[in-house]
Image (cartoon, rainbow, N blue to C red; front, side):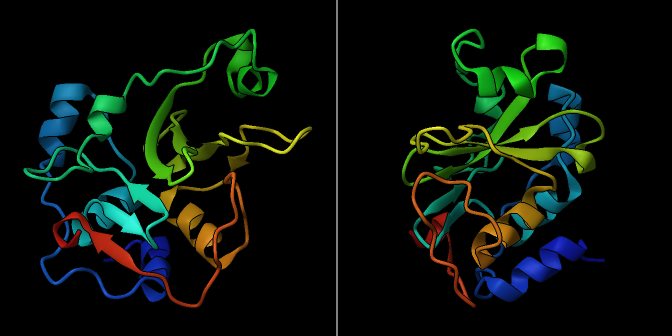
Length: 180
């Protein structure tokens, strides 16, 4: 049974690649890293794989032989700003602790979408680091939803968390790494 948010996303993205998504041994990843990914992300990876949406957003995956997008596990401990220098970033953590973040999408302008890894994986919210934020705006907007609902909101223009505008259209193109 398809995840409802991924099913909605499939209506916006052109059909998945004929070659299919990326085959991932999710159980092995969980055993090796003690990390369980959200169900919508797992389904997206199995359906589409790593690649780009409209040559603007790069979706990262666990390692897949040959894929330049298969580096999400290399990003488990990303370089993050100094919380003493970034008030918006500091506000993400509970009690002043550094927030547990895992990046999974990059924009062509250097913005990064992270999961805020608190609670069960299917409850993780999305946080975006805006590389270039207008003066007085939060560089770390939080989206109250998972990966697929976040992508839906971005693609439909419901939210615009990135440094530069994203073209909201009725249809979008996903290009799998095999087709690049």
